[in-house]
Amino acid sequence: MIANAGVSKVTVNKQNFLTQFMNVFNRYHFIYDTQAGPGLYENKEGNKVKLKCGNKANIREGSPMIFANHLDSAAKVYAVEKDKRTFDLLQLHLIKNNNVKTLLGEQEHWTPVIYDLEKNYYGLVYIDPNGSFEWKTMHDTFAKCKNTDFLINISSVGHKRQAKAHAGKHANIGLQIAKLNRKYWYINIPNEKENRMNWTRIFATNEKITKSRAAKLGLIPVETTEQLQIFVDFFDANINTLSKYITVKRSKSNRSLAAIKANKTRKKLSEVLRWFRKGDSGVSVSKKVGVPVDYVFKVKKEYDIS
Image (cartoon, rainbow, N blue to C red; front, side):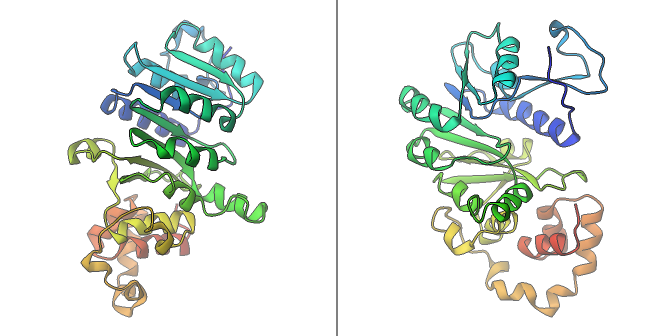
């Protein structure tokens, strides 16, 4: 039995990104998938096929399957799923993968357990929250490990909505992410018209990666105040607060954030809109037009460009 909830273009692009990521970063001793899902998906329109035909076009591998298929046989994948029905599907799909440990329950229960087992080894924590995510447990455990990387797939729109609906309970997502306290930060913004929920991917590590590796994955290093502003625009965070956790250098084009609102920058509005509507990413538009990244994203938000 394969999950047939349907696969959107955003999901397909995410899974393609994970495959590319694992082609580049495949030396982990362990990977902890905090919300694993069923492991395999089938499009609603797809014909039923047997599990052994998993490479058929209408079958998509989920994150735990992608991780398991790209790691060395000695490495481990911890796949946590809280929904019992989804967990049963996950176990079925991963039955032949001896290096995968499936765990039923909330990630905040299993995180300290996995941390105690793997804290001395090089690993990756993958966070792809469907709804709310309990960050404090992660701050108290893996955020303390210098040899742990974090890969986060997150919708800023979804979390902003939750923050409003739950009276601030899920607010400050950008700050919660920043508190993972890594030395180097990279961001990948999917270039797709369907990305109305502002899904983005964040990679945080203590080891600087080469420009060629970053380019293969479309990862933009967060090294300047302009690039840090991406977090501010995506998560309604405070740039001064984030800068306490994410170290960046000041860039010439960002000497004064007040200059963003200046008339000479506003004159480039039509040019920003033109490149954005062609499908270029925000950072690409910033370079082509010669305006700060945060101004580009303010234009995107103001004119509801998706």
